[in-house]
Picture 1 (spheres, helix red, strand yellow):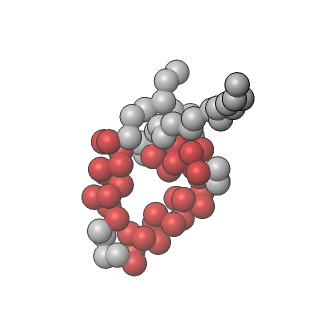
Picture 2 (cartoon, rainbow, N blue to C red):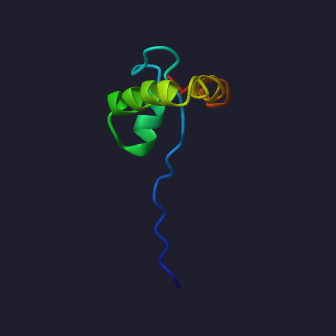
Length: 70
């Protein structure tokens, strides 16, 4: 007989409570276990450094990432 221990699965969701625009950074920060402000600053830096290529990536993440349950 084997003992199997299942770790709870983390689900990637957009945040309803920790959001500024759509909750993408809040949800990703919960999933990754880091502060949401770090992701927001990184996203703004990525927008400027990539000459705006990060904007459609953010929009795609907002569309494709489901919103968390209430």
